Length: 113
Length: 112
Image 1 (cartoon, rainbow over the protein chains, first blue to last red):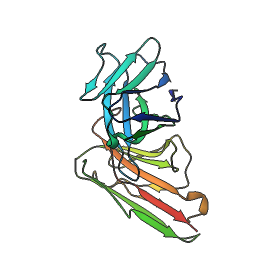
Image 2 (image 1 turned 30 degrees about the vertical axis):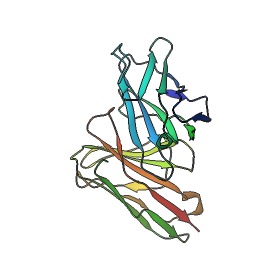
Image 3 (image 1 turned 180 degrees about the vertical axis):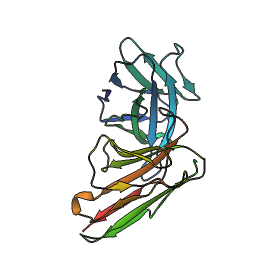
């Protein structure tokens, strides 16, 4: 069974700075997907970025990028030029052949002006 | 924003009442999911469906039931609500599994 660990329950960052959220997971599968989701306060859960495990190149989406280390089973999220709207809970979620996603406990990120 | 809807958004109800939480999506996705989430906590999968007339229980045991008679509709029912059912319920859908899941806004349920 897959497990996922987000070791930082809360983090804060100054506006315009860079922050990295960590995520480690355990899986016996060779082909799987990894996701980062964002849940702003009292708002809808939305996808931030996704990574296919078979791809060596790290995914990027504008200010968001990942550092995917397959051997270490690590999948960290880097947010550059942090904005006030980035304040949210961030969830790491691996998904394998069984089809469902396993969500971590989340990291609460606060961006301060 | 994804086209997935949940009603009601907020529900306060007394113990013992039967409730149905509605979830609909207009994207034609075959895969749909129900998650339970306590405030500030992780999501737990309670039900999923990979197509019409197909439903499965998730990782977290739940007294709720679901049905999937139409592709776009995946309602969740509690026959007799209890205070322990107080939580937020999130519905999601996807094209593939695993795949990007699109979430609804959630229903915040309070059982008194």
